[in-house]
Length: 281
Ligand SMILES: Nc1nc2c(ncn2[C@@H]2O[C@H](COP(=O)(O)OP(=O)(O)O)[C@@H](O)[C@H]2O)c(=O)[nH]1
Ligand SMILES: [Mg+2]
Image (cartoon, rainbow, N blue to C red):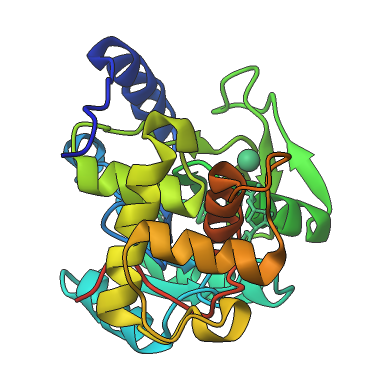
């Protein structure tokens, strides 16, 4: 039985409220989801708040995820007519696809403005997502390419910084960080495995057990190359094999369990065990 995770509705509400206020400023929300656990990356409470906003989903870190699962998740998020991009945000080309998608999402607003005899205004966008999903990477990439920021013009609230990406769209320069709902143990475990929330919300051994369960079921050969483990067994067995292979031994000459666990979790997170998805469709 996994240890109960404590979470605080008060903190969650405050964080949600902050995001809600930011969302009001924009036409389009660019929501980043980790391709390795897309559903765990979604905050359901937030869904209620931004229902009526145009949305662009970006499945990030596809280079670390299982490609066949990423295809399925792309289709899954497209099903309500949403635009979905699969983008490695460490790749310089990722911003071009975003611009194209914003143009598609902005069309309706521009047409309305034209019908009223107005000059089409740049679409206002913001980036939203859980910690570590790639928000800063994307903003930095976009900001580097854009000529200038805009601020303190009519129609803009003071203190907000907007990046003028091109003539078609603006990007709020600070992302919205999605609050976590730790109530769902399975999601919290996935997020801890990906490094989106602190690992210490759960005992390491619980995290390792969850990881091994997934590896055993979906990627049974994943521990062969790095640790020489042909068949994934119980946690103790796996850690012993890692300790032997890497010479991870405590001063007393025993297996250093904590170090072996940390190594396994880190190498998974960094993609060294292969491209893997935690949530399957
Ligand atoms: N492999 C890979 N790493 C990524 C990708 N996007 C972001 N990262 C890395 O993930 C880490 C967290 O990214 P960051 O942009 O700071 O996430 P933020 O917390 O949402 O702002 C950094 O080390 C990035 O280089 C991606 O698509 N693939
Ligand atoms: Mg950041």
